Image (cartoon, rainbow over all chains, first blue to last red; front, side):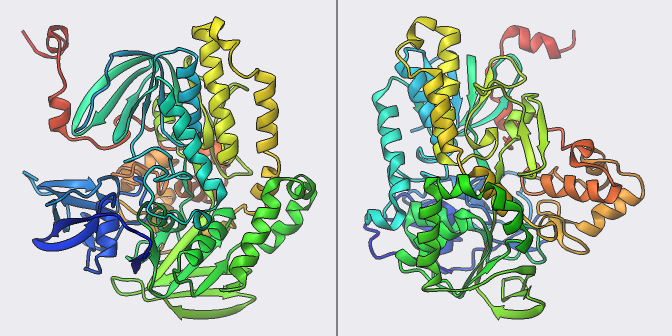
Length: 98
Length: 472
């Protein structure tokens, strides 16, 4: 859906998506890194389980909700990636304890 | 890594580090007022100047000269004494000018003598069939990825809608080597005639030449279809095609990515939650705060600057930021105001920056069918409520957006009405034969962004706080 421009010379950052290593770039948001990864990053909604991807990328739509380092319902579009970050695609509502 | 505010009290707290907030905070700090700038994003710039300090796009022409203006604003701010905190989400502002802000998962409470809200705009909801499908995004979303991560669309890409941002985005995508298969222009034919009386101001504004050359640049490379009267996205769990009607002819094209845009509207959540009076703007089709010429709102001590004060664009936002900050300086440190540009000078700059706006607002006033959906089209994305659900609720007695919450939970999901509020107001107004002003909007309250109970529980409490709620 998206690809990186060749002029992007930012250093790589390794994150893990559902346990699989994914190369991101320093300064990417979690949502941008997921969309560029080519992986199926669709979450599913709490109400009907419908698949969704980020819609606004600016913190207002909440369709980028994702579990980051064990904490659910984070807005992936507002969180920068960090080395070793563990991301889980959130299916349905936030789980108790996450 | 995250930093809490250094003080509990400030002369001026500015919320939002876009064009208006950057200008306001720098002006206030330069005049010697203790100034705190809080911003939710990773870096300063807001949407227009997003990632201005960190963008990996090194070829300056690709983003355009208007973008790099933001670097000067950030530099001026950094040279001032203003305290700046990024990734700070303000979740409460009240009439006592008390602010609650979440930073790194912990909340802090601060008090201001004056607050300048510069929370900007968000893209108008574009509720067409299939707009919740993965692969359908806003044009602004694509622009965010382009500016902050140098990412461009590379699948079959369709851009649909209208307005200056749409053409700017298309030009930027093409310059960075991205792919656009087709542009679908939803501008209503009748709008061209309606906008004609305002054309002179626009033709003599700087927007005209820039807009024209950008449209030429895009049209030379991409097929543009204009006069759309219908638009829908379709696919099974993922966008597969876009269908539209133009000139009475229906066409369906395969697509991996659909970028939607029909203008921007003020981001009202924090202002409304603070109790600031808003009115329906029948030209811009949104809620705008009631403000005086210095941006002061109906709540004493709170001013609004930038697109949150009514859509005016980035140049106007900068000047509005300076006007609001000057008013704060006049109120708190009148002697320092003499050093700042005179009010009359700023007002003249604002008039210049707003030149041509009436033309753009009239030309790009979105058509009813793209604002007020029908049948099974989703209105509230969070709670997955359709237009038919809303109309059924009206039929059995729901009178306005607040009653509708009890029927359907519209606006009660995490986005708190940001993606459905305008649609619900207009849909209910149409169904009940009332004006949007009469129908009203959701009653917004803190927290305006979700925070966890754990974060609330961890807030430091005084003995008096505990006594107020504990029995015996």
